[in-house]
Picture (cartoon, rainbow, N blue to C red):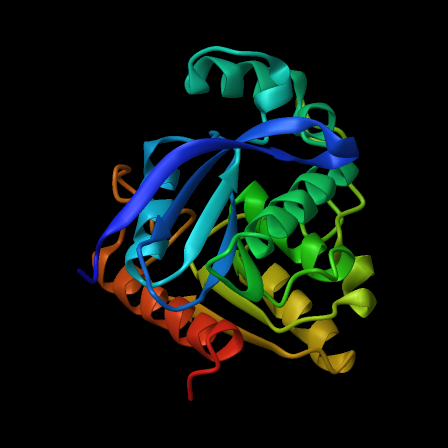
Length: 252
């Protein structure tokens, strides 16, 4: 049965070998399949993110979403995420910790008996920024998809948020193909910021493709929010799977 899958929470070794929780879905398949690490957005590992994990399984990918707020303690996902956000993402999800968790998730997926050895990463919002950085810092990965990752460029100090250096300065270390999905009505990243990211990657000769959508703002894939945009999301997902089928499945 094409859509037969198994979905469950698992433990795996993340940053500094910490055993953290993640949501895993995988297709029931007689042939090896590629894998994806899903980096959730700032609201946390919410029902929509778990729905996306299962969607990858129906498309022939094993997918693992690390619970990046796991270290904040047990409890309802929303309460734990709220505590992490109140602390500030720089403290609750520091870059080195997230990179270690992504690398650990990739190693877990690649070690599974049904893996074809290829692992990609996809992230949304803050997860998109972390995905961009992972494309530069986690060589165990084979492809990356940044969905409206904000604060990739340096950001000034704002109310309740310290100044940030961003991660674009790491672009010279990018070691894999990158797909970017952006809404032209977004404010972080806005059109000018996406233009600048594209310019820097082009000057560096990095393999990247950006798709940008009119009439769409931040998080326009998220089906349970008013920001969802059906037409743009449908095309965006087609671009995502076309890119991943090529880079991880070897499809033309």
